[in-house]
Image (tube, rainbow, N blue to C red; front, top):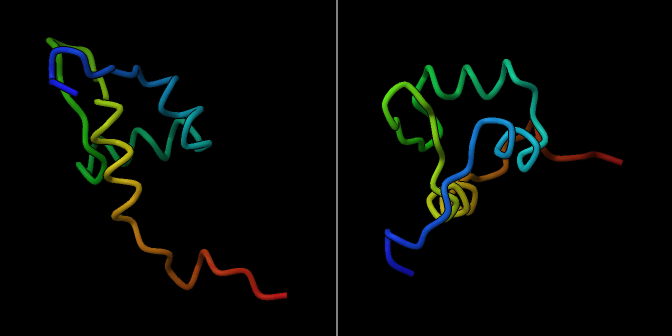
Amino acid sequence: MTKETQKLLNFNEVRDFLRVKDSWLRGAIFKKTIPFIKVGRLIRFNEEELKQWLKRKKPTANHIKVS
């Protein structure tokens, strides 16, 4: 897939996709811990880059459920 055909997602689409609160996503953008693109004043997310970022994330002790 070329960069010209890659889909850009807006804030609400990414928030819903990740199932996180607005404040978490805003913090991740501010800290630059999540990949994003600025288009003028707008924040957009490349769908493919976001999926790759998720694959690189490793579960931490906080994410492991203990039964």
